Image (tube, rainbow, N blue to C red; front, side, top):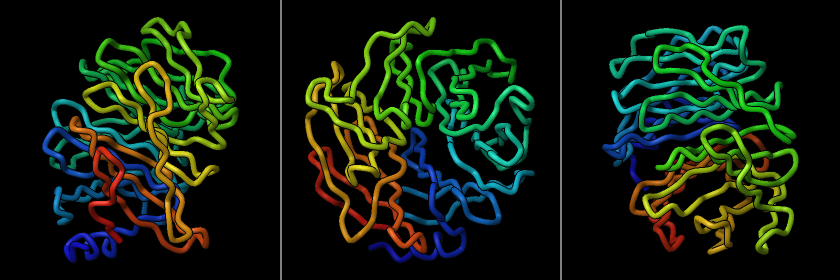
Length: 272
């Protein structure tokens, strides 16, 4: 249990609802979730605190977090109903989506640095160019959009955590598949976040079922890894090799942690 990370989280508390993202170097980005002092913390792969991104104007915490190919960092500011974009050095570059997003939740960035924002209040996904211009609004049969991921071919994965399913859409927003609700033996009680590895395997956090689920690219259940010690998974980020990092909240709402797992689901580290 790496001491540097314990210190890092103590200096930048990970509260309930915190999201997680990884960059190409394997650095870890944690949003402050529902807690005070909204911020994003950047940690090294070994857990050392490298930087903090501060500049959110809302008072409802930071939810989704994402990193683009240039190292720019994005945080969903729910209190201000926008997304704050930072440079890799932590400078606020812009705010995106003000008056266009009802309640930003999960974020994703594709290979062209196009930003996808789950609009929870609007039951939609808002799509922005790298310069922050709204270029598309995707609406479907969403109950409440939450976690997002983008595949290598541009397909969009949307977690509908109100209806307990994952939807796959083509780049135009047309629905290709829906998993959950017993489809392919997959039951999702209250899914929140989603991530992909380089093989196209899909990882979904489901605190309602208290597990991290691993699905194949065609939506078959490959594995289910329960959380333990009265914690439940919230957000997930996968490395290309299939290792995953999840944020987990305690049942009492007073503590949170990060769990690193091998591609087979074995716990490699628990960061508190």
